[in-house]
Length: 513
Image (cartoon, rainbow, N blue to C red; front, side, top):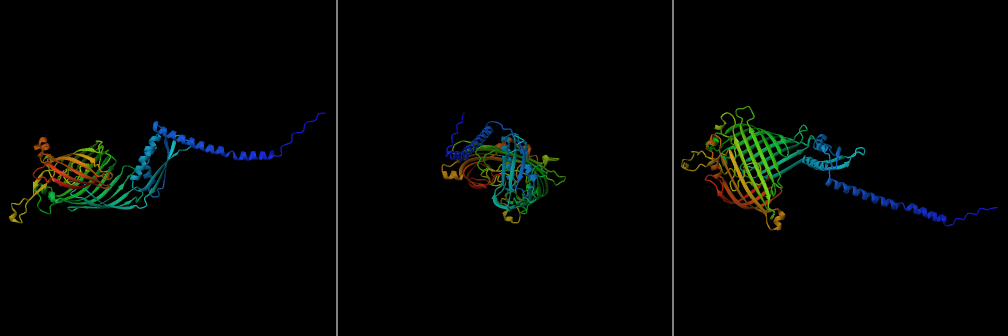
């Protein structure tokens, strides 16, 4: 009878070995998990690198599924949505990144947010190739702000001290309300108040201001100007600006010494005008441009009111600048030419004079580099220091002074042309280079003439060019965050008897216009 062999007895340690193996099996899975996390991170990193590589080398299709706005407790959603509308039009990752930069810049420019953060997130899983844009804003904690500064503006006789108070976002539409006061030398004062709306009825920005302006031109042209008015900014963008102005203006002569040309223009007048400005500025700096170009064209038409006292005129200005880098000591050559023309319009306009304050006046303590907008600055000449003049009336209060020179009034011109060349360069000193202090050599030329009241019949282009006033000089420039300080020596190459200009040292403070 066969007997089945007994099974081999199990080792007494087999259970312990099995337990150890089970323990090892419980411990071992942690290593594969670690490797899995590392591999996943490596895969994600490779995907990210591939994405950046694709963005740089090829177009990545992508569209925006949703724009999510957070943090605006007071500011209306419609204002932010209007600024972010361009995000909906993108069709690639590259366009989305560029549009996000523009949106960030536009929201910061509203001046009602302390910070703006834009996050790009993936869209819903069921919609591949989409992204969500999350915009987080932090509204300004202090809506009330103020500032005080000293400035020098075009056709100004001296620097002005200006102060303003602003209150931001009262109604949540990005509205900025302000009140300002400016006072300068020779009794110039201006008080104004206004409001700025970045999106008026969802369209272009709008600005409205009321102002009271008083200017004293007795020293140069024997009259005072006082204007009370209202201005409305209809279009305001990077390249275009359209402004309507309605004001009541009074010209007076308290000294009673004004020339005949000035006395004919004294009295009241209604200014109803539309002013359009087209501007392109591709220079790398407004205070010290070393490459790029700029162009400004300004057209103004006055007399848009059905009133006999309405001032009627057509005024055109242009200004062209070009900066050429030379590559040595951060040097650059700046070239500029500007011109302007004004004419009255209406029946018999050829026999009529142009309005006095709208005429062109050259000279002043200004830098041509900073005064972009039209013919104004000319090195070496004082404010309103050249051009057509007329003899002032002499008072008879002192008979012994019958032979004394009563002086002359600068009455401005209808045609003006200026040009300049400026060569700037760094000093060898590293300290000066670190502070931005540099030198320059310059040459400027310009002229102004009368065309109205049939004076155009005697106008000669050859005589106009031959009578250009010219000056050259050298100087040191100290740029700051607020203005450009110039210490110059000017040498007059050509000037005429009644011009107010002479060789010598000049100090000027200029801000970009």
